[in-house]
Amino acid sequence: MHPGALANALVAASSLFAVFPLVVAIETAQWPLAALFAFAAAASVMQHLSDQKRRRVPVFAVMARFSTAFLWVDRVFAYAIAVWALLMWVSIGTPVDPVVSAVIGVAAMFVSERVDVGYPQYVVLHSFWHAHAFWACYLIATNSKVVFT
Image 1 (tube, one colour):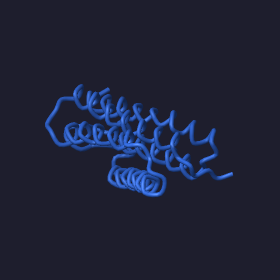
Image 2: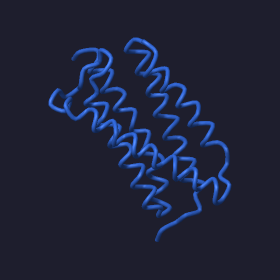
Image 3: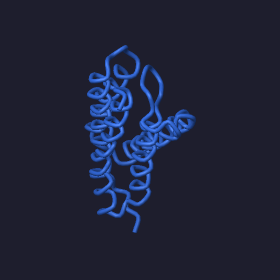
């Protein structure tokens, strides 16, 4: 396997961090939030399996032509989660922890995407971003007062 494809596969696997907030959202019957987390994770996996920018090659070449579409779907769900968090913060005064975690993660994502780093550094930094993003989702799910039954 090409090192770029391996890097993409490892980063796609790091989207499994979504399991933790997803379980909390399901156990607390926060169905819209659970759907957001599930679709965000799925979009992230699909995007990374098809990613071909900056010397990386897709894990599955047949998916490469959909890479940009998967990227935008991934972004839409990330923005939707951010809007949910913002609305939650405005309505009930959520703790600052999800914001701090997201900011740390975004810094790691920025470096992994914008700085010319090698494959190992990219995998570590982008996986760190996924861990922090889904940790923020976990904090949102555990602090959300909106429950749909």
